[in-house]
Length: 212
Image (cartoon, rainbow, N blue to C red; front, top):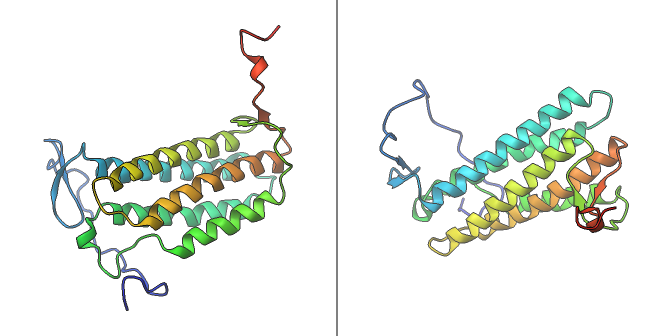
């Protein structure tokens, strides 16, 4: 088994969290998976912190499906989002590890995760009308929350690209975030169509200076 084995299983977590606070980070530092002590202001920390933020917003979108759309079949999308959440945690795990400390069973993003997003994008996009303008967030809470996820995903991608300028980063990690942001855009559109709510389109002449 090698680090590139697409069928190798990741190791299960080996941790026991008995205390929520340790006070070790009170001076503004934290430790990476390999034990290295670093500043919380470091770009690597900002990167996986933003991935964590994205994960929480995706969880909120799933909860909105459960609470606000009981009469609409969003089960497939909900299951897809549920699959994305551990993938994001896997991404955060490897980002919290220096390249030299990444082992063969370390959770991370593989080609299969990127391809699964591409398959999902193609599937949902087939059920959407062609766009005649840019889309604005609105129509339903789920649509807005998926747009929020999309913008956070783009931010995570930008920070990750910046990290590549100072450290080695697996290209699949960048590809995954790039594809996920595209998927979130398509899912947000589909959510509005599925709920039979019209999409909010960009109309430049609705601005204060041009509207009558």
